[in-house]
Image (cartoon, rainbow, N blue to C red; front, side, top):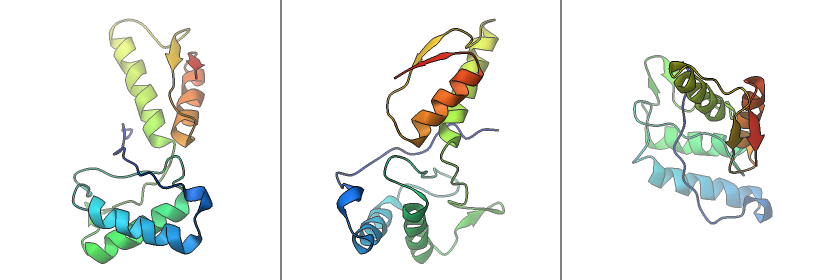
Length: 135
């Protein structure tokens, strides 16, 4: 199946004016608190606005330091880092719901909030289903 989402949270840090060392320390501190609320059988963080592969690496490194058991069922925690997955999952979910009602996304206007990787993946997938993304 498709992952339908991930935890959404944030901070008031601007990653674009921070040094590499500052971002690494921030990500490690953030994960130290976040680890209480996530896990392979609970919820998985994902990339988003200002959070790319490098930041996910910092987060995962800290998670591994805190929690030695970083896998479940043979699937390593945080190994699934496809930034489009949450958006694709939401669109598939919406399409399935509409199909159950004898309808489809074809021609529907769909509002997208945001402009990050997930929002762009939602727009692409909506277009594939014939919907009209609105931003």
